[in-house]
Image 1 (cartoon, helix red, strand yellow):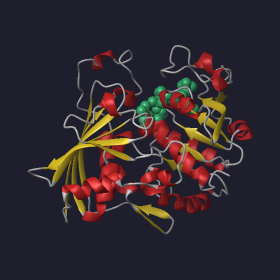
Image 2 (image 1 turned 30 degrees about the vertical axis):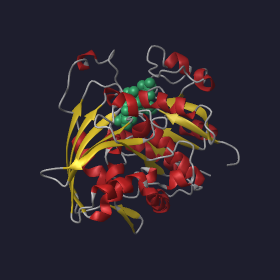
Image 3 (image 1 turned 135 degrees about the horizontal axis):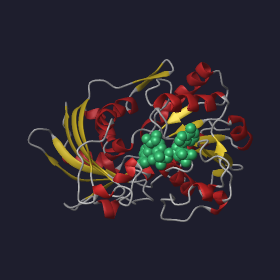
Length: 359
Ligand code: NAP
């Protein structure tokens, strides 16, 4: 690429925002030129604003330490210093939707971690290895918004990265029924054991809204582009239970699946081993060399051993075997705040940059 694209992070002081800043430090394509948050913290330097709430294991990147936080309402100020924005804010859905649209209409592309626009039919919801073709709806979205450059692209919920990658190359065998139980880390709720001591030695069998997202978002990811919108896949039924477990980072999924034309086990393993997407072909900076890594050992994948595979961007799987009620079962795992949140959004931005959408 020629010179680096300038980006601002909206929600820069939050858990996902902090992760963005650490991932973007010394990024080969992007340079952080702005930190944006609510009117509560606007005007403070970044280090003042996150004092006592910096949650990353590495220090605050030097390039942002002294930056003054911009109020997210001041879009012109952000536009003056950035080519595009990442967004991860803790706001009611309608306010997030309005905020993201206002930035897009101001000709600043928005790459979002929020759920507000996931079901807008001309907004691509992307796992770059799986549905990069959905980016083509950006043209019709730009027409709707009346923009030449601005648009919104989103990443899906963190839970689905632990099973959708393994199911995708098996769609061609007539995948029809999927049952998933997810075991989700506390960082997914923006917490650690200090801020959520009740989670030590505990399990909570409820995560608000998560089961609905986990059952429906894969259908949009597998959907078809028709007349500038994404039409979700039909004929695949997914049922889920989502459970909060005492783990810092990393979501695990226990998955059962049935097919119309059941493939042999060896075929499934070959499909997983050979699954390469555009990020691998283009060698995008955040792309894992191997998208799905299958662990042969019976006691893998394990959170502590596999979550940081390829800097937290690799997906791991194990224990593929026949089942008594379904055709097969397996266990999947992904890092929820890297692949499942900020890292996934950075990978989308890298893809968009290479395909010319951010120029
Ligand atoms: P968080 O730690 O509570 O941070 C919230 C951020 O939103 C803060 O930077 C806050 O800024 C900012 N904010 C609030 N109101 C704002 C406004 N009016 N304008 C601009 N910024 C505003 O939340 P989080 O865990 O990072 O999550 C952020 C979003 O990402 C949520 O939509 C969440 O669902 C999604 N997400 C989170 C995860 C995860 O693993 N945690 C994974 C996937 C998606 P102030 O400091 O000024 O209050």
